[in-house]
Length: 121
Image 1 (cartoon, rainbow, N blue to C red):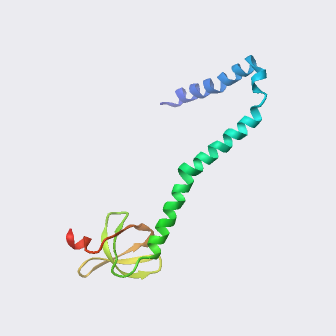
Image 2: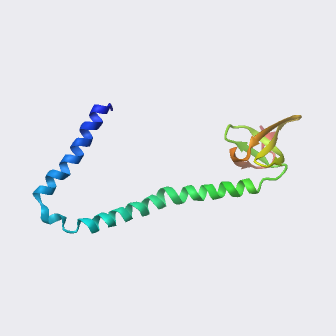
Image 3: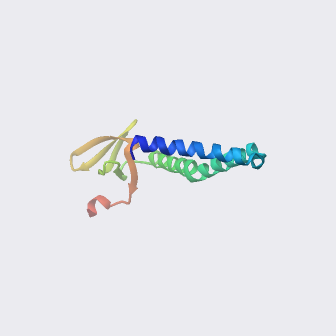
């Protein structure tokens, strides 16, 4: 869709309600209250479909990060599997292999894996 078609579509959408408003002025008697009810319903729908699930996921992620201890096997956003060696503030030191340690940000950990996952791969 190019910009000209978007402008034409927007112009049509704003013109059509104006034409219908002139045709039936008595039909808009409860327009303000109807708009408020519609706005409230839209907000409630957004809350249950977007805001609440996102805050629930964020809470679960904070709980996951707080529960990490030495020896836990984790998966990072970048797809790195590692075992937690130590906590260094905002960073975790992950052991990827024998003698290979990598610092990663705590926020990049997305999943706690069952014990023995790394050896099974």
